[in-house]
Length: 87
Image (cartoon, rainbow, N blue to C red):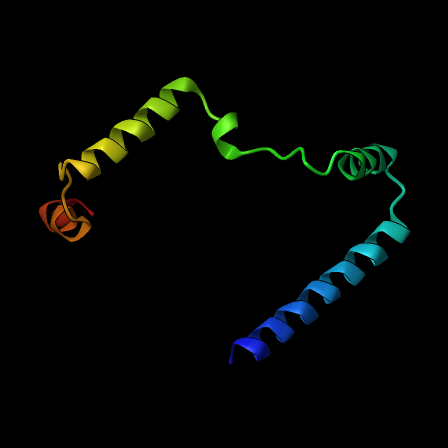
């Protein structure tokens, strides 16, 4: 049930937090500590993968999405069948 799933997810999160705490207690690397402090002070800053890719990659993704919308795609199974002898 959903309640059980939420409960199990909560337990998993708590377990992960405890694992992180244990790791932090043993941590000696000042650089990592500084990065963690930065994350704590700036919780809203997150890196969206879209912001990390090049303009040409973005254009390629946009073109692919447009091709999907315009049904300019070929099913994976069909492509695989056409190239089966080389795979």
